[in-house]
Image (cartoon, rainbow, N blue to C red; front, side, top):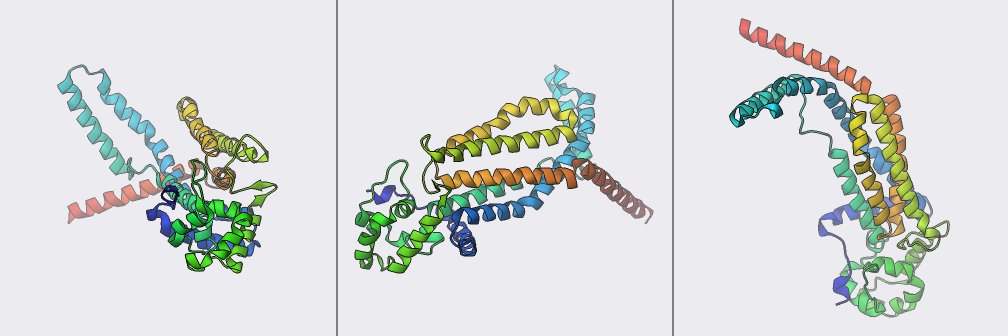
Length: 335
C-alpha cells in the first residue's frame, strides 16, 4: 500500500524527463556535481530557447496594438450594444464582424494567434524540470529505480506521507541511513545499489547544498530555507512590474486597462509563493532564476527590439504585401 502512494511521474512526460535528465547529467559533470550551478545554467539555456518565441509574441502584440484604433472605429460605427431591437442588433453585429474580418485579412492579422506559444512551452519545460527534481536517481544518475520501486519501499520501510511521496528524494536525503541496508539487499533489486551507485547518490546529495540550503527539502517558515519562497515572490513581482512598465511605455492607451489588471497579474506571484512551500526548494530556486532571466530578457527586448520598431516594420511589410496583392489582382483582370 505504501508503494502505491509513491509518485513515479506522469508517463506522458517521461521522454521529457529523460531528455532533461541527460542535459542535467552533462551540466553536473561540467560543474563538478554542483547542482545549483547546473540548474542555473540549465534555466538560462531553456529561457534562451524560448527567446525567439517571446519575440514572436511581442510582434503579435505590436500588430494587435497597431490595428486597435481601426477595430475601435468599426465598433463605434455599428455601436451594437446601443441597438435594442434583437434582429437589428444581430444584423449590425454580423455586418461588424464581416468588416472586422476584412480588416484582419487586409492587415494579415489572425486574432486567434495571440502568441500563447511561449507560455505553453514554459509549462512543458516546467513539467520537465519538476520531473528531474523529483526523480533524479532515475533520470540524472541513471539508476533504474522505478523497476524495483515496490521492493525498495519494503527494504527501507519507506512511509509515504502528504509531503513525502517521492521515494527518490527520500533516498537522497537519507542515503547515509539507508546505505548499508541497500547494499545488503541489492540482489533483491537487480543489483542496482553498488558501492559505485551509492557513491553517485552521495555526491549528488552533497551538490544539492546551496549555502546551507538543501534543495531537496520542502521549504518551511523555519530556518534559512524560507529565503527560497521569499525570493520566488520578490522576483516574480519584479518580473510582473517590469513587464507592465514596458507595456505602458510602449502602449500608453492601454495603461488604464493594465492598471485594472494589475491585481490579476499579481495573482501569479502570490500563487508561486504559496506553491513554493509545497514543492522541493529546487523548484522554487528554478523559478527564482527563471524570473531573473525573464527580467533581463524583457529589458533586452525593450531596448533592442522595441514594439514601436516592430509596428513600423509591420506597417512597411503590410503596405508592400497589400500593393503586391493589388498588382496581382490588376494583372489578372487585365488578362
